[in-house]
Length: 258
Image (cartoon, rainbow, N blue to C red; front, side):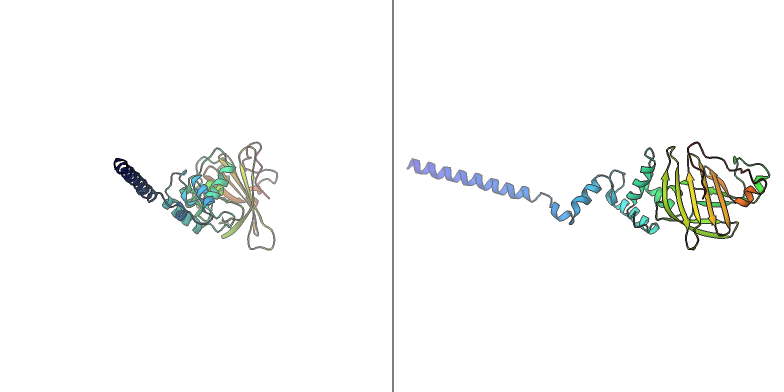
């Protein structure tokens, strides 16, 4: 009788322990996140891309998902380049041209919203290497934004204002060229013309040069930092056909022109 009661007691204890672990495992399982429900089809690649700091979930850039999503939406409104559908793709390309430089997402989007890279100002800026005669020889003075040029990728367009003609042209960017000294040249052409009208813009360390072929003649641009001018070649060469007052780029940096 004693053995029988001992066996019943042991069976009851085993049943109680088994029931405890069953209930415990069920409770733990209810707290395990359902990752399969959170990752979309093909989402493993997207999750890796996001974790690395890319796309709309760029934690590495310090932005929240909603903030990056809003920036991406703003970016889509100012860029129709199919080769750079994502803002981060453009920033990565910009940083590849300048490995030691960083670009802020918000500033890039804000700058891209500007249709042109320079605006006209009334008076000659201080510090430009011009003689008193040159200051009033028909040049148009500008405030230049080198970052607007830096944001350009092949396939983009940029407005080219030439006030001496009362015209605005549209440049299509064909290619970019990075030089050993760190300067970058953008090669392009004016759209909507049967004949090729070439545009070349070089941005270096504090000096930017451009050559612009238009149906009304050739124009040259020079900017020291943000201060500069644009003028027709006829204006620049009217005094001496063998001289120009354009500042030569630093050694190793090609001159802008056709």
